[in-house]
Image 1 (cartoon, rainbow, N blue to C red):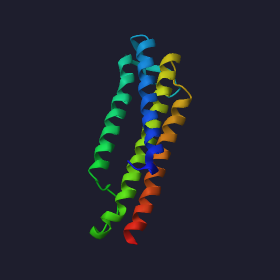
Image 2: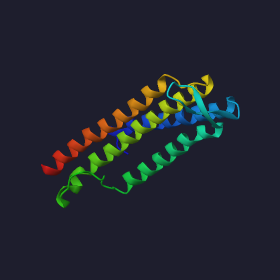
Image 3: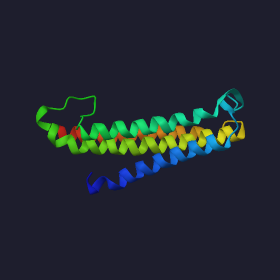
Amino acid sequence: MGKDWLAVDKLALSALIVLCAIGAYGVATLPPTIPTHFSVDGVASGYGSKLLLLVLPVVGLGLAGLVEATIKANVTPNLPFTIPDEALERIAPLSAAMQRALRAVLLGGFALLEWAILESAEAGSLAPGFAWALSATIVATFATIGAYGVRIWRVARG
């Protein structure tokens, strides 16, 4: 891990810790059954176990491990353009940077979503922050992919 990415890796780790803490807090404090589905007007219309709050932390842990494994294995991302063999070495640092940035963005987004889910479960109605958290996560994810995709394309062609 280079010093350039230490801050991004710390951000991803912090987001993972917050994500797990929110899930643990919800499991420790909520009743056994919580709202898990909401109608169009935000009213609870389906219920399930509070243990569902552990899904995003488990997925987040898996995502963090998978991204770390792909970085260590120097896996080239699947992009919508061909990368010439002679450019693979040049794009490797950008590929790893993109994966690290995506890990941080997705784990941060998962933490926001987990917080909104917890807030909705506590209130018994869909929290206003849920739509915002979901939208922000989607926009940040695609912006990261687009920005790094363009940079990789330019380096691969240059």
